[in-house]
Image (cartoon, rainbow, N blue to C red):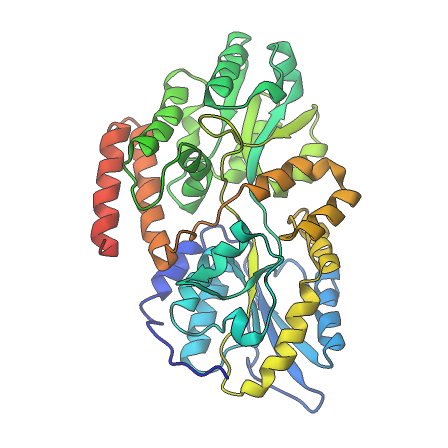
Length: 419
């Protein structure tokens, strides 16, 4: 039986807004979250307003309701609005039965006491990749199941690299990449573009380099962290990356890459189809760690969670709906729907690669990826992330040195998180 008090709801609304920075389009609301009818209605919220009723996604959600013997009333919001609506609904004891939630926000809601654990629901998470499941864990408990994951890698322009005599598969570490950028620059082409924007997008794109250096988010000014920021600053100073990275969104990064003038662009799985249509040959490599191997890139994607209900008899059907959505075949359907979410299980990844062998590098990237709230950061992450992106901005703009910027970031993060 799940019956616990809700905690800190109002205080965490600000945190919910912060972790929603990678939101999509505006959504539509409405509906009584716990409305029922004679046939049995279960409420479902997700952050996909672009998938309207009658779409493949909406039909799939409804099919899982039908399999569980109920009708699903689906409501779609944009990512930030969804988190805030979930907090408000919990305050009003009017939560939906199921929510698909951006993974950094899971711990925010879990910390309030408004989310049931997978153990309480009787859900089996043993086949979920541990590095992906970690984004939904807090204080040793698991609060949902990822429906898939996207992450970052390096897209490359094969024509530019060929002209520079660079084999992309030879790039194994930071030194290799910097040497490739130097070779590209010598041919008169541009090296690399990425987003260092002063929002969550900036932290999202910096984290592979930060983690790839061996740094941890609980020590923003470690020598490893400074190495990562020095890497980016060095690229700007040498002209390997443009000063526009300071104001680039991830969409702007992609638009720059599609001009055909850049050798590399840091971006995500969501650009796979666009890359295939580019007017030049493209490819991808995993983001390299400082000393070799794939750097841990942050995971994007949603978790399927079940808010606490006053009527605990509803949980059995809720579990059935969630189980329907998280089979191996279901993960592959999700991957294809969102072009491409990589399944969070080995079986799902194998099934996806059987259909799309060209996604093998993305599967490797997701296997090496890391949740932003992992390491039990929970609701501290938005505070730490803001200090991190502020430091990156300060250093890249030349306002201060990487060391000084990160020293300030660590001091501010510690003061605001009470560490």
